[in-house]
Amino acid sequence: MSREDQEDELLALTSIYAEDEFKRTDAAAGGEFQLCLELPSDFVISIKSNSATNSSADNFENTVSFLPPIVLNFELPPGYPSTTPPNFTLSCKWLTPTQVKDLVGEQLFSRFDRLLLQSSLDLMADIVYCPRLTCQMPVMQEPGGTMGICSVCQYAFCILCKMTFHGISPCKEPEEKPVELNEGDESDDEDWKRVMEKAFDKKKNIEWIKENAKPCPSCKVPIQKDEGCNKMTCSRCKQYFCWVCLKILPTANPYRHFEDPLECLKELKPPEEEEY
Image (cartoon, rainbow, N blue to C red; front, side):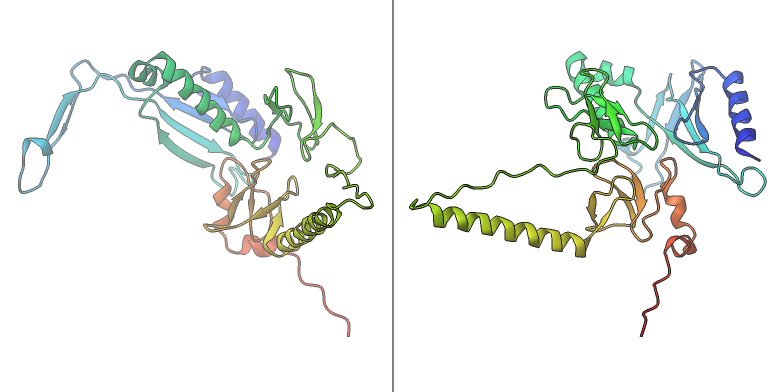
């Protein structure tokens, strides 16, 4: 099935289901279904323990009037449906926002809602933040571009260096003001020593980064791997990528790349032969 055929299928699903039942995914060819179950008034859940004590604490029985919706997320791979089935995950959120608000109150729920939104935005690879300290609003990144424009303060900035947008010119590090040394000043030696120590530390840091870090394939910022699997998340642009071959991974299912051990070998470039 071509990309156009997949687009037609997603459009058909959008027209069949209501907005609260099906939502398309903007980042990839896929979407999300929400299934809500309506329970009868006398629906009872009963849990009985098989332990030897068989105490009342081990048993549970109560009437249930509500169950949270079941969520099905799916993504259509390029080979769907001819050669590849869709990727999907099932999940169930036990507490809805309304339930949380009733449990903790208005003030605490407002903080919870703000942190939940912040967490969701941090997981989105196409979201950056306005670098102005007085703003810090989320900004949607344009695909393939390096310019971000804040919709609140209208500041146009480079999403890589967070400075004023500079077009095709390379990013520049903030210039450090040189230390002026005056003749006859007793503090000259100390100032010179601090300058040399700072330059030496900067050189050692650059050497360490070259040996222990790899550049993010999206924004090129150096990333260090401390532990865990080879699925990495860039601390700057939140892009998922493979530590071994540096391939950018899809947001919906980044672990699919690691199901086939030959995937990394396909992405790695063969070493150049040395000339003798």
